[in-house]
Amino acid sequence: MTEIPFNSLPIPNDWDRRGLPAWTYHSQAMFDLEREEIFLKHWQVAGHVCDIPAPGDWLSFDLLGERAVVMRGQDGVVRAFHNLCRHRGARVVDGATGHCKSAIVCPFHGWVYNLDGTLRGAAVPSSFGSIDRAKFGLKPIEMEVFHGFILLRFNPGPQPSVAELMAPYAADFAAYQTADFLPVHVPDWTSDLPVNWKSVRDVDNEGYHVPLAHPGLQDLYGRDYRDLYMEGGLHASFGFYGDKPGRGWSVRRYLAMARPEAHLPQHLRKAWTYYGIFPNVVFAFTPEGAQYYQDAPLSPGMTRVTGRIYRHPNETREQRVSRYLAYRIDRETSAEDQQLSIWSNESMKSQAFDGFHLSDLEWGVRRHHDQLRRALPVMTLDRAPSEAEITPRNQEMLGLSQGMTQALIK
Image (cartoon, rainbow, N blue to C red; front, top):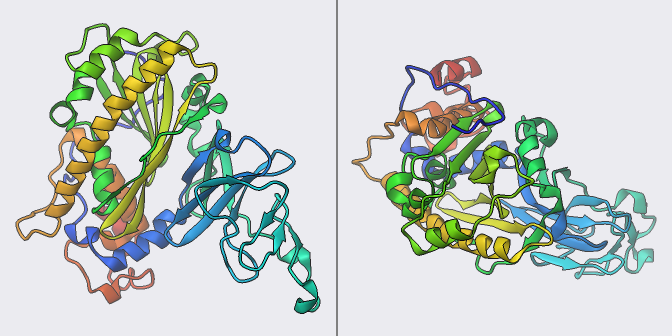
């Protein structure tokens, strides 16, 4: 088997095969806790520096009522701010991406901000009395760039810096030359699914379903597939393809067209790879290109699956065609996973659903659930408490101290 440049945590010999209880998938109070303790406190990917190549270019990122704008300043530095005017809270930019020539002008009353977020001036400044412009710049958001990818989090959280968190991935990201990527604009990339976000993760966090549910992937790399689990909620998957011709149209042509990339180490030259970070972000690579995708919760029963696609600079014809064929295979795989997520989520409200009983090949699902339990101990309860009880302050009242939680998830 191809050598992978980092080690996997061993799967325990005797582990509890239960997953999260069904009630955690449709509780509004649980969803509200997840917003505060999971999504706003953990790193989210907003894009890539190539999405905003010139000073004044910006992209937006919205999550659960919070709004961010990531902008390249006149000095070339990329910064993230709350997309919120300091006057009345209007969006200072509207849309997914755009460009400001020399300043950001709030469309509500015309407050003007420099591209570094500082306030240049208010409309009719005399009407505000004495105003200290230094105190009214756009509010910054914690942000880091990892090999070109832009990650941010709205509130301080338990995860370390991006550089420390994703260090096990650094060698592979460097090999893929991700800092040099260019964007690929694909229409209809975003899908809204009538499911809880955890149902999307439950499907994506294991490869047990691949042979039956994903004929395209099975055709591409058969059983030569590996899931690896690391500290800090990192999860990487590798699917290796060989020289055997595929049966499906896209796979057959992809295998005929794909060329080993000389700049890649041996273990990546004929591999499709997936690098996940808790709770909801995945970076996916083929030798020809890359994408990221994430499950952005909208409500307890609605999730937006979104992301972006990238290519190498100076792309050859062979790379472009191979990337298109890979996209066709991945598009079918995504549609299949979305249907599985819907079916799985539906079961959570059925009186016949007895909970999960997980295979060793679904250890990634259990790990993800355990991380959620650590952050939100109320999830260890088999029976749903009242909605009023599901609050941060009430978790210890329910008998769920941190020590008890650790014992329950071992």
